[in-house]
Image (cartoon, helix red, strand yellow):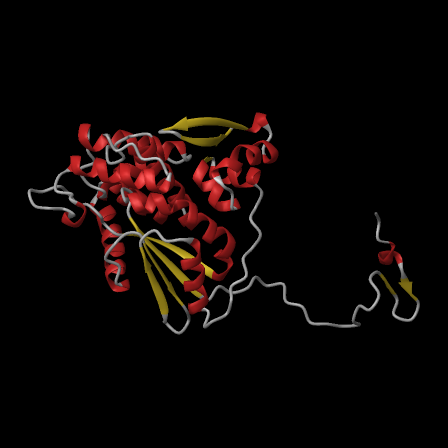
Length: 308
């Protein structure tokens, strides 16, 4: 029903529109300045970082207007050697990773195959990390983060060795960049220098595990949250660095817009973004998406949806 109040014209004020408008008021159309820096210290082969993706995406989408987002490569695995790599998790050799990854995948419902680490193990996380840094240098943070996401999909869900040159080139090509040129530059000393800068920053921030989220305000005070945690932990941390102010979330975008941006989403990611139970997912998909706009697939017992 049309609201005819907008048609009212006041002879005294000379206004046609909503009654009661002030004669003059000050407005500021400049975007609100972001006063907080968020550092996400991570690694391409970090399974708990993969598990965090649904929550981190929602936090960034709904609260990103409060902070500048920085991704920092942490250097999880330079190379395998004879000694223990992660004795706390029983990891002494590549094959030990497979079982640990599967546990993380089953618990988080972000699918992880893991058999790659028995058959054709990733020997170092440094090569894909260097590719990330070169993309970030020549393009932007968003494109580098897109590469990181595609690399994790390839590794965890689709069992590809993302430290192999051919795989890295293909992933970079698939995000619309020159894979040959970028991977070649990443193999040079300058690529390692870029990565070393991130390692130094991670040390300065006091990050010793992955994932680590660090939020710092203008007063150089902040919070550090280690591990894959529920959304409430990050919102509470943000409130602390806002000196107790309760942050106001933005409304989630529609699923069609989210899928258009992200290209591929797993069931768990949609459930977390829209507060759904697993049993509610299929009805939500059918309501929100047109059948001709997406493909539905399954890997390791989990559904995923790809933008056509």
